[in-house]
Length: 97
Ligand SMILES: [Ca+2]
Ligand SMILES: [Ca+2]
Image (cartoon, rainbow, N blue to C red; front, top):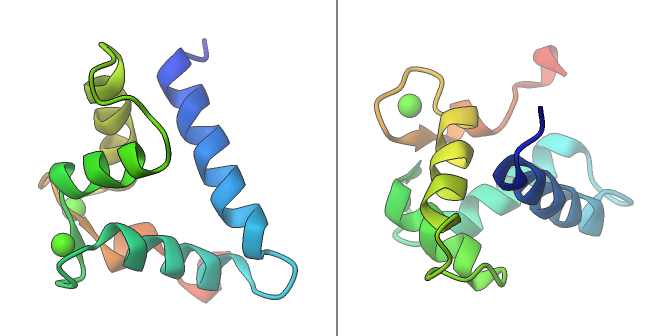
């Protein structure tokens, strides 16, 4: 079953990736999204940074689903479950594409 939260994330990611897909490959596009989320530039994206990123994309932080949306986003990328999305977790390596 597709929840509303994961649907939103899919829409957001598709929008972000499609914007630049004509001239760049997927890894390059994701790298740009990662840089945009990583506001302090330490190559790690935290719950807080994802929250700020999603709200900058128009999601309402007061919405009751907002935290769950952020959490779903974290869960789908944070492969080792340390509550931090690293660059390697977010951007697939070329041989994995
Ligand atoms: Ca960061
Ligand atoms: Ca991690």
